[in-house]
Image 1 (tube, rainbow, N blue to C red):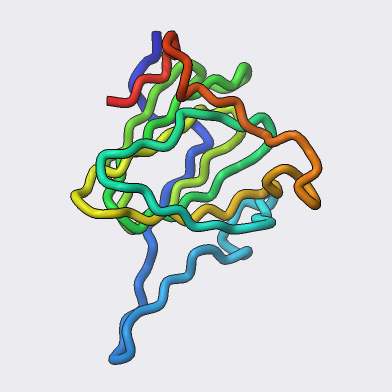
Image 2: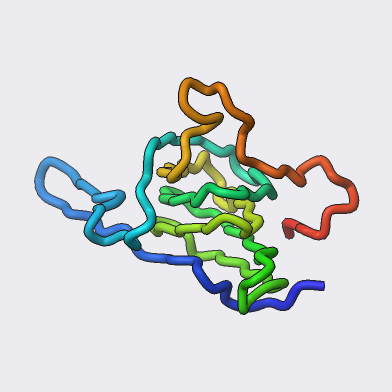
Length: 153
């Protein structure tokens, strides 16, 4: 059903650590390094236990800006109607200390592949449940669908 390959619109880049005698600092995002239309409006951090997956799900409007601070496998499926990579599946196993920007219409999931808890920071461009948490959440979830085509290995 899906073809394995790179998906158009997925942006990946390494987190750069600035080290000194006190420890380290990492810039998670800089406005001058983002595509012009992308503007994060909130952030959150999640911890995922070893061997546990989050997703698959997709957003109609939201772009996710994931910062992986642990060993995860990232799964992506392109379902966008007008995408040149429609029906492509992309699996990334080298997510540690990397950023991945996932546009709307790309189904995504990630799984902690390490032996310890892993952290993911997200800086999406939409507020969860809108201003004041008064709107419908922009998510289409597939986790509990026994017939889902979005399979996590």
